[in-house]
Structures are given as structure tokens and as C-alpha cells.
Image (cartoon, rainbow, N blue to C red; front, side):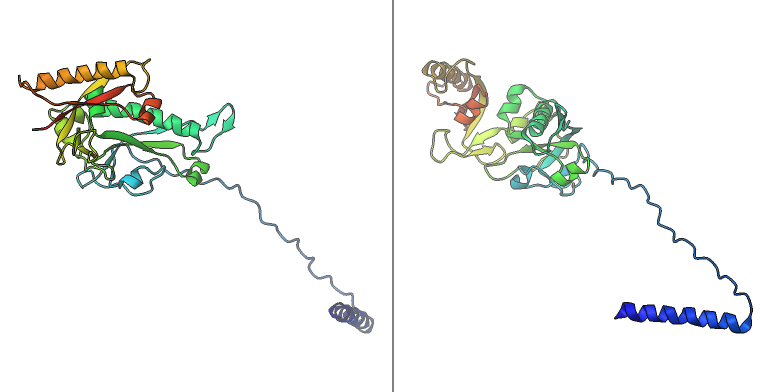
Length: 280
């Protein structure tokens, strides 16, 4: 119905124009010709820059749960305030392998990050390799979220943490550079126990907490030995006994305990255990 009414209205206007022309005898003037409508010119758009990388040397107040998460979006805190992690290194990973773009959460990318972070820990904390093994320090790492990686972020962050117990992190000093090279560093950050390692009440704690035993020496195991092999165990126990004798001050009776790595640690390639002595 609307189309019919519109057509009739147009026809009436045309008739009116013809009649007016015949009566006046004047030449109709042409109105302005319609201008073509302008289409908006497309503008080039650029992708937003990827989120900035975190800063090396920054400090963070994280729980153990947060520290073991793959990403961390919490703000850094001043290093003079209480904190539980320190960023040792910020680097960049390569997400391309054999011409394929890998996800940030792929095992290849995560293995690449973990290797670079683990090697950094010893260089920053200082001390010897055995100092590092006897300490409660370890390294955790963070990568961008999937959305940040899709936006172009390729950074990774390595943080040092010290395990206070099974479920919490220790407070860290404002400066961790060469920390394990300082005198008596293991008195505070070493590995201790609430009981003998073979006790049902044994819990591994940082040495600044109350404890009864302490891991005092690293005992290497033969690379070709089997897990809990008798010959390897006898050799390690004899070496630990000598450590205890040296620490006894000439006492005729002394106690020691050798602790094997766990089966998971053994499978991952750890070929050393700990010699434990009771604390006085």
C-alpha cells in the first residue's frame, strides 16, 4: 500500500509541473544536481602494543599458591617492605619452532623458560652448588597469559623464593645478590627438619624456624647406580658417618642419617642425597 501511495504522489507532482509550465510560458530552471554522497575513507588500524614486560629486581608479596601459578598479574611491592619473591631475570622466549607458532602454555615454551630460570638462580644467589642444594631457595617462573601472548608478549620472569615449610614461603631480605655467599647464610636459609628424616613426624623447614635436625652435607651418588641400590647406599652412609664423626668433637657416640632423593627426583636426574645431623 505504501508503494502505491508513493507512486500516486509522484505522478501528481509531475502533472502539476506540466500544468504550471503551460500557463506561465516560462522556461523552467534546473535545480542543483544532487551531489554524490561521500563514503568514509577507510583508515589503517594498528594493533595495540603488547603488554610491557615486568622489571628485573622487583619484589612481590605472593603466597605459595600464587608463586606456583603460571602467570602473575599482581603489582610489585617496594623491596624494603615484606615480600616473598624477587625477580632475578626478565627475558624473552622464542615461540617459533620449525616454522610453527607455539602457544605460551606449550611444553616446549615452558621448558625453554624453566631452563633459563634455573641457571640464573645460582649465579645471582652466589655460594657454591652445594650451598644452593642445601638451601631452601628455588626458582619459580611466570609467562604472559594466553591473551597477552596473542597480543605479542614474549617475556618471561624468573623469581627466587625460599620455602619456609610445606605450605608457605619465607620472607626475603631486600637484597639477594650473592646471598648464599655470605657467612652463616644457611643458618637462616638452610634445610632443617622438625625430626629425624625417617621419622613419621618429620617436616622439612627453613633453618630460621624451630628444628631438631639439619641437612649439613650433600652426598653424591653414582650416575649408573640403581635407585636405593645397596652398594650406593652403603657408600653414601659411610661418607655421612664420617661427616658426623668430624662434627662430633671427638665424641664416641654420634648420630647421623642419610636421605635418598625421592623416586621422582631420581627419575628427573638427581644423583645426590643429604647427610643429616641432629642439632644441639
